[in-house]
Length: 245
Figure 1 (cartoon, one colour):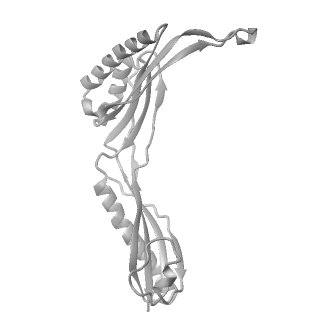
Figure 2: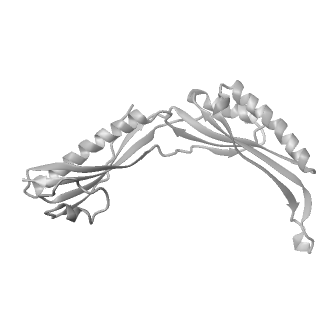
């Protein structure tokens, strides 16, 4: 795992002899009497790591003159698609329906000649979201989707299945960074130490990284390649220090 910290820090020193001065700031109010200036910092730290899972959206689109026929054909194709996903190693609990749509279709090509739209049938769409936990087989799985009748594939979005350890490491890094920055401000303004008095967490996240989006009618001859790269797991802290002599 490669760790690459990134820092976004903003500081504000408020000369305040009492707790009441801190109440004018956003964030927690210090629970100790303020005998010196209050320093507020916002710190973000990120841990770079290889993802261990991906999310891919896929589905089937069918058309027929009658609504029930469009839906029936769609259901038949979806059965084949889901069977291919399970055969490819995807657990059934990692396959989730994300949308079903049935809509009438019209031909508007003759509107310029003064004619109204011509009804041509119904279009049925069924989409599923798939969690891929074996990234080494993600490309093969995409090809299997298309071979099984998928008419669209979108993704993948990479992620970390259990980010808690990475988030904890980012928290520790953020605290170290905040303390070092607070000590710097203290020394630069003639104070000896910076004592932590409040801390709040702004939130942790693993930003999505969509790498591919495609729509196709037939399987390509070349195998699909998917490169997971690395993603950032980040945490933001808002902290306040009291500067002491």
